[in-house]
Structure formats: C-alpha cells, structure tokens
Length: 103
Image 1 (tube, rainbow, N blue to C red):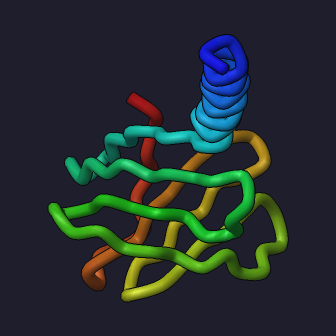
Image 2: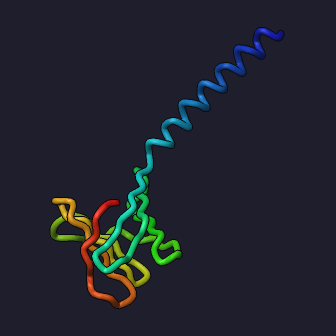
Image 3: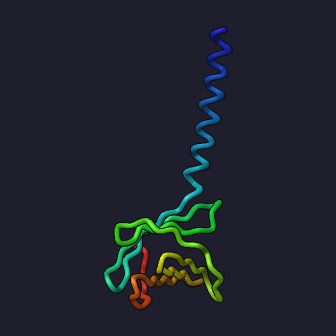
C-alpha cells in the first residue's frame, strides 16, 4: 500500500508542477517611465484582453478598445496606446498624452 501512495504522490506533484509552470508563462509585466515623469507597471494575461495597470499607486483595469494602428486600452480616465512599432503613450488625470519607454 505504501508503494501506491508514493506513486500517487509523485504523479500529483508532477501534475502540479506542470500546471504552475504553465501559469508562470501566461503573464507579462512591463515597467514604463514617461517623458513627464510618470511611472507605471502594466500586466497582461494570455486569457484576458484587459490591461492591468499600477499607476499613481492605484490599481486600474483597462479594457481593450478599437484602434486604427496598434493596441489601445482605456478606462477610469486613463488611455494606454501601444503602437505597432512599440511606441507607447499614456494619458491620465486630464494631462496630455506623453511618450513612455520600457524601463
């Protein structure tokens, strides 16, 4: 009976390792610094079309919006635009849009 428990435990641990390894690859976080001094972190998840921001010390969830070129996210007075070339701008707190770069 001890051998069967050991095999079951090994299979469970292996399956758990595979699942947790898959979850680690399913997310991307980037830190940006903008020309006006704004800094923010944005997170993307493979199974979610939203962008998750941490800006001005507050978490904000932005919905993906229709864009002519690149990708645009907006919500709660914040707009994040990531162009096809990788150029990124953010507009928040009624400030003009400002260019940002990955840190």
